[in-house]
Image (tube, rainbow, N blue to C red; front, side, top):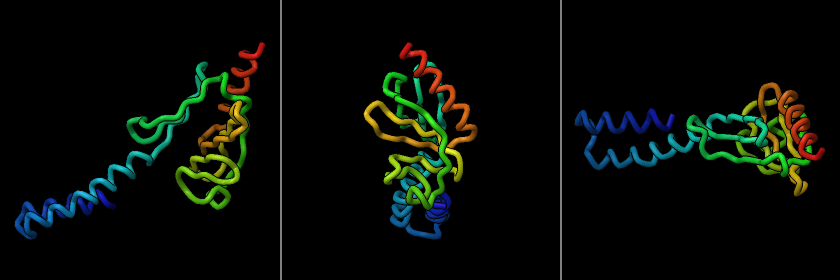
Length: 138
């Protein structure tokens, strides 16, 4: 919505419906639009290197945990009400990235902290991470 407002203000200013100084109003709306789109999607990727969670359409910023820093992985059902809402949340359950209500892939780091991300097929991700951490310790 902020992007639409930014475009509308610029078009109105270019069309002579507003003064050029009104186009300065587009700046904050454009910035808000870019910020929101940067965190509008999450990609969780499990590989032999561990877990990578990338944000936004460009996959940046990203958080990574190597398999040596993952103690275990599991699946938990979480709701936005449990973690404090939608988005990137800090709560008594640890850090949660909540974009979908339901199954979350939860890792326990070697430092004893939990990180959860709501993803499709969280069970498969947890099983793969547990297999990788078991390989590492053998």
